[in-house]
Amino acid sequence: MPDLVEQQSRIADRTLTAVEELLRSIDDGDLHVADPGGGWTGATVVSHMTLAGLLWVADIARLQADPELDFFYREEIGHDTIGAIPPTAAEAADKIASLRRTMVSTMPNHTPEILERSVEITTLGRMTVAEWLPIIVGHVVHHRDQLHAVLASRGKLPERFVVPEGHTGEDDA
Image: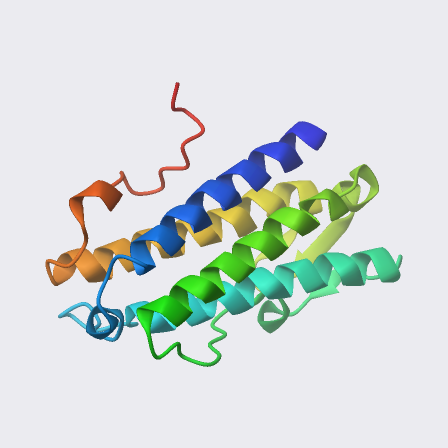
């Protein structure tokens, strides 16, 4: 299972690095527009990604501290959470850089014992942490795609950041 942790760490690192670089390349105003059809702005997506990622790190610490813990409410994994909206693209990039450092540096806390733990998340079901981890990291990838879609809908996604939806880079040679 250490391979799983290493793989998910690479995906999180690669994805969040690309999001940070994207945010450093756009204008502040582009961060605060939503898709013409509605939905979250780029700034809201960044806020959500940050909180959801940090809450998962906290959840792993909770599992380490409490051997009987086996249940999380959706809010405790960051579902639908939104915090402070970054006013500038630079601050948004800094938030994502901070999240990347935290997620990657704490990934080793997903020990074999923690990965084997079974955890239920309300309305989502019960699985082991090893089964949840790719979903949690996939959530980061999903919101990178959402940010791309918002910017692309306004003609503001720089060509160099275009990747297929769900792309993690793991299949690249």
